[in-house]
Length: 534
Image (cartoon, rainbow, N blue to C red; front, top):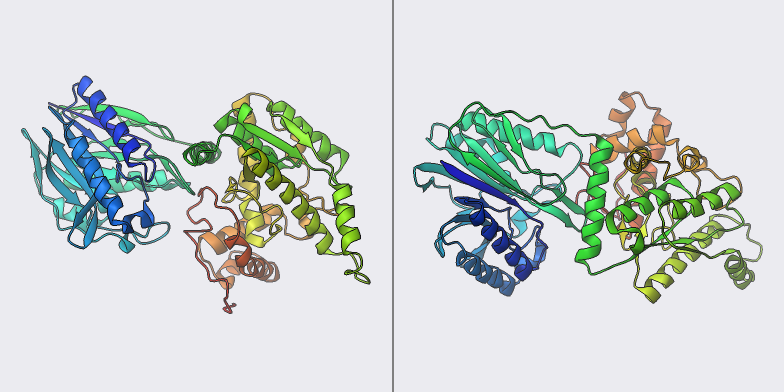
């Protein structure tokens, strides 16, 4: 019999010493629990993705020193640890087999993803074909993340007599990713007739969230053990040849997954970047209410501060809801009426604007005044400003540069307006009360920058807009293909034009948490200077 442990840890990119301590502590735990092997995620020592840190020779060198330190703690136990290997002028995404104080073997990742948020081909060289490893009476194959997704890799293992496959991963979360992973892992188990031990990273890293959910599959492709999602975990499994293991079925709701990803991503971004408190412009609208709720759940109410900035266009209902959101979540807040500041700007610019009618300039001034106030408090008290813009608005440029686009982190950047509402309702489920007031959820969205303004004055209604944006941005559908889905040609063309014309704004927006299969930023890299039009 063989006892195998999966250490689902939260590494921090660049924190080599801290990550090493976590790995060593997990090895000690595995030894206490009489495990024979303990498995760690991909690039556990460096954190994932280390990006251009890998171009620094001394960074790679220090990571190798840490590997040797870890090896010294592997007395009477085998550890499989993800690290960056180096040879001549090349570096590799690798897994080390550590035993009795020594590095017994190294596997180098063969298949380097170079799409979506991945650019491993920029840094790493592909490894050579793997070898079969032995441990006592057991044989196994090592693989790293993308390897096990490839038919050519799994195909080589067919017909080989192996007991199990180890797959160490740093697989980022997005909605629907869990099912794609399971499909690949089930296929590998069935084709090779071997157990599969999948150990995934957990934690937030800038715009990426790693959801953990490490898994164990039988040779029949049954899921028989699973780690927690969105939190660290330690799993042990006794490999004793039993064929009648109970299969686990995993299900999840879209809003529940999104909530968990946002909570973890926000918490880790704040803590790993040495912030302690955040500030949010609370408008009384749905977006800022959801950001406030997520911040309280991720950081604690004592670390969240609200700033309410009404103007002449702020309705009494919206103003009341802004205060109610703060009260409901127990966060302190301050009210700064911006009317006098707006008047001062207007007076200062009156001679320059003489003869010009009021237009979006005056609307944007309000947004920029609010942005300046948020940044002033950020500078004075060290708060991190949380941006409240959602994907529907950011896609269409329905936002003001240096105004409501300010902030250090965009929590809702990859959430459609429809998903914002779903997660808000879910928050109320979690709270067991109407924490986000129903009036906030039910009120027609408005920027309130002029009298009787509604978002629908400038944008299609969100239930119509969101599906078009999904087709165009996430699935790269052309105008013609979207129209064939039954949408009005004039409307689709208008939406596409808004998206294309707003690229320069998105480049200047804060980063935000990836939730969908294709988010703005690393996922979608469109040129700003771009004359291509359909």
